[in-house]
Structures are given as structure tokens and as C-alpha cells.
Length: 329
Ligand SMILES: Nc1ncnc2c1ncn2[C@@H]1O[C@H](COP(=O)(O)OP(=O)(O)O)[C@@H](O)[C@H]1O
Ligand SMILES: CC(=O)N[C@@H](CCC(=O)OP(=O)(O)O)C(=O)O
Image (tube, rainbow, N blue to C red; front, side):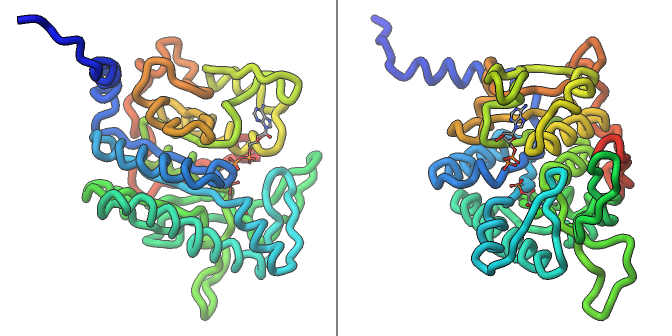
């Protein structure tokens, strides 16, 4: 009997290439940060939702933390409110905080939940206010060594992962907006105040608290450029110490991402990656293929991520984060 030349054989090869990665990641938590600029294209958004649901079906435990900076800016513009950024953070007045909360929780998060749930009853949207997920204290910007007031911007100081763990155990996909309840103000009649938290910073803190295998930050560039904007050479892999040396040279948008990657890896997450959200199915390419794309931050440990301690170095429940100035400035 002759063997047919099956045209679908390359598909089998692709699946087999994924086997070691499937084995390695099975049962592991992956925190994916979906950025405002990577979520402007409808097809990319649909591909993102497919990838996240694929991860869930492949036995991983995906958690989505989303941004929405461009969407917040557009809404503030429509309302005639001028917003500005200092040290990469939006100066947030109490009136703007209402808009930030409305856009993140009422618009961006709802859209992502809707896209994910086209594939089944998986996504559950929350903000950091729900079930005590995030508590934060007021954050000041450091500009040329000066402490500058930027309004209702917070730094996460406490994370209660209980609700997220319960959702993951139930096969759900948590979708989190980066808003935190205040931990440093007395609760008023309307309850405690809330803070606007940079979504990269929130994703990194959550990845550490969950003892995630990987933090994946999607953005609108290929990864970390070695000498941006002069060159577009992407650094494919670097250690946290190498990142320490590079961070002072980085420009605004990349700063919270790379600080977040450093924080996550220093706190037990095996790898943190910045990947190109403009590439369809970038999450699957990064997790399940030998090539990988984007920039990967790994521990200094010479053995690399394979020899890094088991995830979970940070207690999984009710974690006080170590939001030091050095890590988050
Ligand atoms: N070294 C660097 N490598 C890549 N991008 C950089 C670098 N330094 C600054 N950037 C800028 O950071 C931006 C990504 O940050 P941001 O716009 O905040 O992304 P997002 O909306 O996805 O959160 C890039 O579009 C680029 O303009
Ligand atoms: C304090 C602060 O700057 N918060 C951000 C929160 C959203 C965010 O981080 O969105 P991206 O990931 O799309 O940039 C903001 O108000 O824009």
C-alpha cells in the first residue's frame, strides 16, 4: 500500500513542535497584559481573544490585565478635559478618575469580555476594587529627583488573589481593569476612594502575587529596541541585571513595561516578555513555537529560567507587594 503525500502534514509538525511547550506550561498561570495601542484593530482583538481561549483549552491558566490609555484620552478629549502625562503616568484629577473608571471597566473590559465569551462562558471581568483584589496608596511622580503630585494615581501595595484563584480553578478567564481601592484614605459615605494604576505595573504585580509562569506584555512595537529610536534591533533576551543597566536610558512608554518585567522576574515569575501585539496570534507564537518573538527577561541565575525556582516564591494569597521606589519609580 502506497503512502499518500498528505497535504496537511505541516499542520501535524506545527502541533508536534508545540508539544514540549504544552507539557511545560500545562497547569501554569500566564498573565497577559493587553495594551491600549495593541487593541485598536478589530482583527487583532479577535485573534487575541482566540489565543487566550486557546491557552485555556491547552491547560494553562490565562489571566488578562488590560490597559486603555488611548481610549481614556479619547473620552477625555470628547468631554473637553485636557490630560497630561508626567513620568509616563496620567495626571488624574478626581473628575478624570470617574472617566478612567468608566472607560476601563465599562468600555474596554466589557469589549474584551464579549470577545472572549464568543468562544464559551469563560471571561469574567473585574476591577482591582472587586473582592479586595488591589489596594493602593497614592503615588507621586519622580521628576528630576522632585516628588510631584499627579493626583489620583496609585501604587499597588496589597493584592488578594483569592477571587482570581477561584475563577481560574473554575476554568474561567479573569479580565482585570487596573483600578485599585485606596488603602491610605478613610472610607467616605460613598466607600473608599479609588486610584488609577498603570496597567503594566498592575499586570506585573499580579503576575508576581499569582506566582505566574510568565508575564506577557503586548504592545505596539516588536519588543525592546537596543538603541531606540536610532535603531530597530530588538533585544531578544536579557537578564534582570542587564535590564537594571538599560532602564535609565529607556523612554516613557517602555519604562513601566520594563520595570514591570523586572519586578515580576525578581519576584518569582520565570520569564517576562514584551511582544508585538500588532502580529496576529503573537501570544501563541511566543508560547508554543521554538522561535518566540519579542523580548524576554530572565533571572540572573546562570541556569536561566529552566533552573529558576518554582513559581510561587511570593505567597499566593493576600500578598503585600514590595512596591519599592527603586522598582517602580
Ligand atoms: N527602547 C525602546 N524600545 C521599544 N519601544 C520604546 C523604547 N523606548 C520607548 N519606546 C516607546 O514605547 C512605546 C510603547 O509604550 P506605550 O505606547 O505606552 O504602549 P502600550 O499602549 O502598548 O501600553 C513604543 O511605541 C515606543 O514609542
Ligand atoms: C496612571 C496611568 O497612567 N494609568 C493609565 C491606565 C491605563 C493604561 O495603563 O493603559 P495602557 O496600558 O494602554 O497605557 C492611564 O490613565 O492611561
